[in-house]
Image (tube, rainbow, N blue to C red; front, side, top):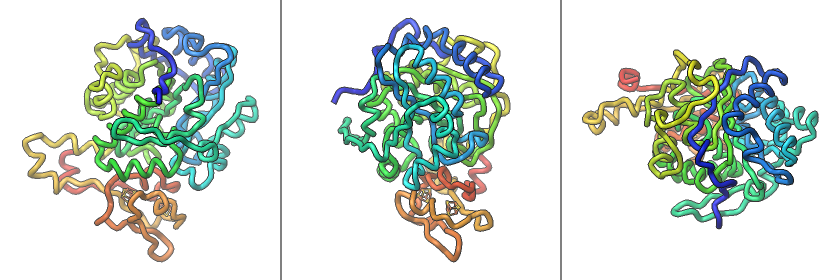
Length: 384
Ligand code: SF4
Ligand code: SF4
């Protein structure tokens, strides 16, 4: 199969990452910020042609209000759709949330996408119902939703958040949602270690490469994201053709050392994009934007152990999910989503059996009540 790369990269703006201020999510402000962030890249017309079907791929991780900073804001999606229409193309919106097994319609309703789609007359595509196609890609097999493979152009609309497993979820990680619900759990089971999971994500990105990534970094998430972290107002939009470069700039902005985020490092090593921020042309307001004091996820501790000590201390440096029975409402969502089925009901709440847990942190990511905490061993706390 041909890779689903949507357009040939244009050398002149390939290394440009544009960052602009966006003071609020109100429609006037966000449209203005969107035009400004796209200007250094040649505007939307550089990516979209008349008559094309354009898939907008937001982050719709769970059925929560946009104020929780878990999902891409619907006003940004609407503004992007308007720009696509101005080019004479047809926008559609699709994502497969981790929780889609409980119904995508609830996700659309609670994230504001349903209301936005009705207002703007935009089709929401259901990746679960539309079927998927299995694609062999090197040693990987990816099941990709058909609307993704059939789109003429993909515009990636990630949310800037920390992520307890991959450390950062932004442009590359957002493409994981092109696989329907339970197929994502299979990948966690096959690639439980963070670096191998990141390598899988990068290969998926190579297979399904968006033409453009526009990051909702207005209300970002810090701490132990991507769903139980803390909303943090940064007031920014970011954009670029090269998702590796966009992620490198985002990681630098929120305080990760260079090369720390595996998806960026591996993507750059594979020659898929530019991971060195110094090699990028940072445009727009980039020269004076900051995200001081941004809280990074606890799981980064594994990368902070000095190399000579790794073998010696690794068994004592653990990070694991623990369910707080006082907060658990017994919905069972974590148990359904756990790829190795190691979460069981105990009375009216659920409990994790540590022995079989592969530390993928899917349960932490998907718990709708933020009832799953990430606990660190004392040595992990020491290195953190
Ligand atoms: S831990 Fe969260 S997802 Fe699991 S049963 Fe409790 S509330 Fe539901
Ligand atoms: S209990 Fe949570 S972290 Fe452990 S394997 Fe299951 S989903 Fe992953």
